[in-house]
Length: 263
Image (cartoon, rainbow, N blue to C red):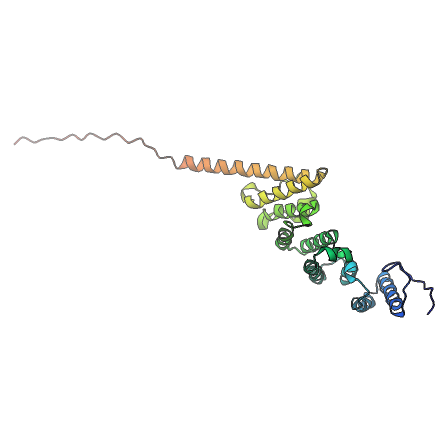
């Protein structure tokens, strides 16, 4: 075996492969990357399927490549369910092996990689219109390390709460996040609990990233709607009290003239 080998893509182990098996793995990785560059996803999937079965190939470190192959470079939402299932499987794998030893040996199990997976999962759920499921995923992971210190995840949670607070007849999610000056909805139909949750998540994001102007803009939007809702509720209660007031004034009794006939 020749000691010198030229590979197309510099990845995996930077050291020269000492065995014929590792040379073949490196060649197969070149085939994978070359197929991706040529948009030949059928061959890329076959190369990926072989590589993930090789113990030398740490496929957990290349989960983004697997996700890209699943998507096949398409902008439509038809492959979103498969991509969601793939990321959930990766996240559950990291949870099962979430130990310091795993973090040291496999960088994909590091906190940064876990946060990236959750961001990708939430974005895919939003793209498919599954806003409640996206918020449920965030509420599941945000209380724990390392997600609790990620400002972006708290912003996602705040915006999802803000969107869901409108009910079924509110603004589209894209419209909501793209226009800072637009009023969200009629304050009387907003969900107070979700508004408070949105404010809490955005405040948490602001405490983590104090220079984030997006957080400040949406915090102002939430506060304005909370104040408006409280004002409308107070006015409603006041009008109801006025309508329930009872008139205590009693009408004067009429005097009846009684005539007594002589006996």
